[in-house]
Image: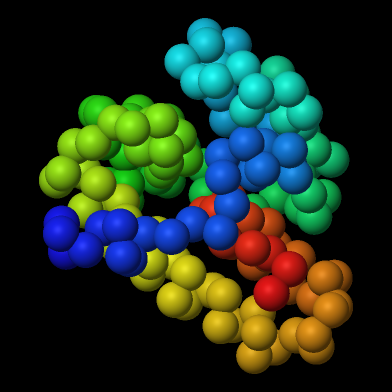
Amino acid sequence: MKKNNKKIFKPQLSPKKMLELGVFGGSYFSEKDIKEFPKKWFAKAKLSKKFDVEVNLFKIKSGLSRKEWIDKGWIFKEDPLGWFQWYCRYKNGRRIPEIDQIQIKRWKAFGDRHVPAIKKNCDEGDIHCRRRQRQAVLQWAYNPFV
C-alpha cells in the first residue's frame, strides 16, 4: 500500500475547508497547536475554546471521545490528537510511512462504510438526512453533501 498512498488517499476536503465548514465542535486544536499550521487555514475557521455543537456544520455531535479513541488504539504518539492532526501534518508534507499507511487505511475504511450508507439511505439533495453521519464523513475529509 505504501507505493499506492497517492493513488488511494484522495481526500475531498482540505484541512482549511474542513475548519471553515465546522468540525470537532471547533475545539480540536489548542492555540499552541494552531501555530504549527499555515495561518490561512484558520482565517475563516470556525473555532471554539471548548466543544460547541453549534460550530459543527450539521449542528450535531458526531464521533467518539478522546478516551474512546485511546481505548480503541486509534491514537499514536506521533499524533496525540488523532487522525485530523495526522492529516494536517501529512498535508503539510510530513511523511512517516508506517503511520501514513495505517491512517490512510483507516480513512479509506471509514469512507467505504459511511459514504455509501448516506447515498443508499438519503434522497439526493436532502442534507438533513443522516446529519450525524454527514458530520462524521466531513471530519474524515469526505464531502458530506453526497
